[in-house]
Image (cartoon, rainbow, N blue to C red; front, side):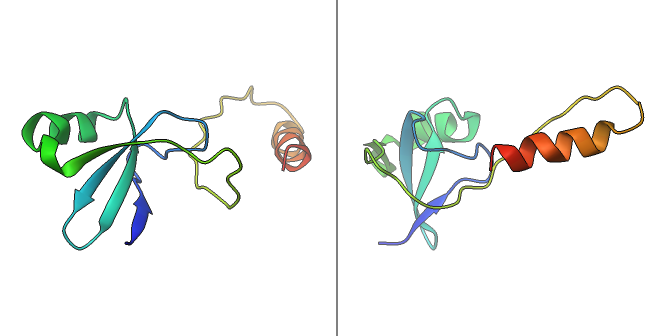
Length: 87
């Protein structure tokens, strides 16, 4: 079965997750707090599955970050350094 990760909520290992069986996309994994999957749970509960992460998950997962910085010299370089240090 094809498994995809929802782009609306970006589930990450360790998050509480729910799967939605989607025609053409397979099993779409959402955070259990995602508003999009909440609608599906209400309207199509038969297409939703309780899921959990394996203990040791490997791979890359896309995330969204929101960063607020003071406009000062070197702020962007400092941010880049912190991100690089945390891989």
